[in-house]
Amino acid sequence: MDLVKSHLMYAVREEVEVLKEQIKELIEKNSQLEQENNLLKTLASPEQLAQFQAQLQTGSPPATTQPPAQPASQGSGPTA
Image 1 (cartoon, helix red, strand yellow):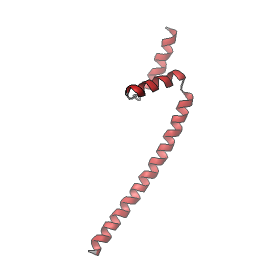
Image 2 (tube, helix red, strand yellow):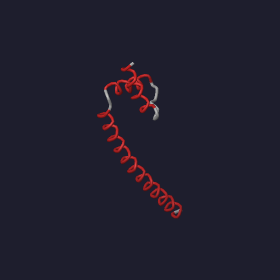
Image 3 (cartoon, rainbow, N blue to C red):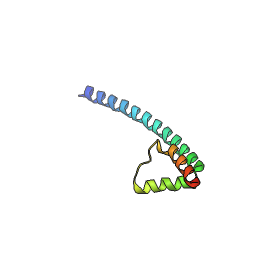
Image 4 (cartoon, rainbow, N blue to C red):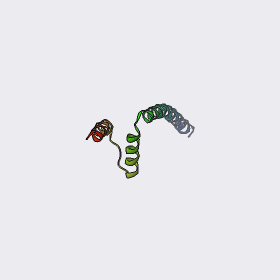
């Protein structure tokens, strides 16, 4: 019985170490994304921020290909 217990304890310790490493990586990634988000907020125009807020309120998720297309459509909108 002690053999089973020690084996389980070893397995749990190993899993805890893996999870700690994953948490560390996720914290680092989160910090990086927060910095990127803050930078993008400072660089975004008020129109882009308003459009993003509208997307959040309607529940439509912004696509990764959408932001490059938005400035072009916004740029052509005021000139037309």
